Structure formats: structure tokens, C-alpha cells
Image (cartoon, rainbow, N blue to C red; front, top):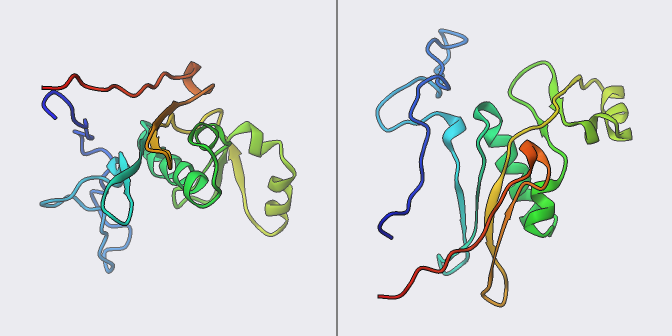
Length: 163
């Protein structure tokens, strides 16, 4: 629709500029037709008739992918309402020796269980700030945003005026 669209990352700071191992191709090197991994948002999920049923995204640079993925799996795999999937505590692993955990996970028994089998963590006060829309089985749309992170968000469904 005219006047609507998605603003994507317009910087190159999320690309790798030298491969970690010169003998191995690094898919995150800049090149034609590429965009940084952190810009893989918004994510749009289609049903079996190619109609949109869920769209979500997040700012957050390096945490965009983990934020979108955890929200997506919350709705699709765990059956959570979109607002609950957005509000769920998050972890972020970005190929580092430690995984970032939000306070609710940091203070949970799960952290100790995972540390006992060799995982290492560091605390992050908040990871991402998701928003999204989800089409319900009856055709209505639900819009949702963060309830607490970054002071909470706002979301709504807009119905454009007809021709």
C-alpha cells in the first residue's frame, strides 16, 4: 500500500569485514544482494494459501535474530498468545563463549541446570523490543508490543479507508 513499508538496516556495521579463518568462506562478508544477519526482520509467516498470518520484528542490532526467533517459536511451537510470546524472558547466543540471559532466566533454576552441563552465562537487563501482528482463526488481527522492555510499547491494527 502506498505510504507503508519496512525500514531495513542501512549500515554495514553488522557485516564481517575479515573472515575469522582465511581458509573458510565467511557468509557474513559484504557482497551484492546481501544484507546483514541482524536485518532479517521483520519476519512474515504465511499460511498454506500464502496469506500472512503473523508478522513480527524487533530493533536491537545483534539481538534481533534471537528476539524474533524466540517470539516466533513462542507463538508457533508453544501456542502462546502473541503478547505472551513477546513478554517471555529471552536469552541471546551470538557465537560467543557466554549466552546472555534476561533477569527472569538468570534467576531461574534453569540457569543452574545448564551451568551444570557446561553452559556459561552473563546477565543482560533486556534483549530486543518486539512488536507484531497475528491473524486469529476467526480472521481478526491482534497487534502486540512489549509490555515492559524499554518502558513498554504500543501496537494497533489500522484499517485503511476504502477507495
